[in-house]
Image (cartoon, rainbow, N blue to C red; front, side, top):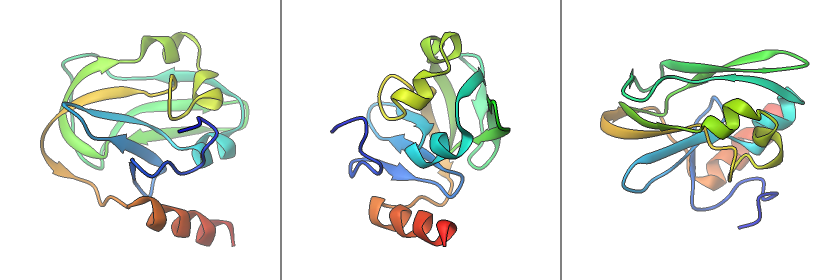
Length: 130
């Protein structure tokens, strides 16, 4: 997968423009669409390892030169890893939203937001842009 791919097919998506990758833990980031709408990202605030997050609840903030946006957890669980590289260099969210710009890893404990498959998310973004 190229990091410029706008909607990678192996991921699931939320209406708040977060993506998640399933594995032993759930990796979460913001979508290409989200980073494009935000513009140059200048600040990222993330939870601490060990923090509990709730599906649909906020877990952090992304700020850009244009605006700021809350980050919403796609699943409930415990944060097992935080991407310190993205905190130190927020531009990773712009340059590699599906790669080095991931945000957190979560050990799920049950409960998920409404998740979309790639085709559904592409349709959703198309409707938002109309």
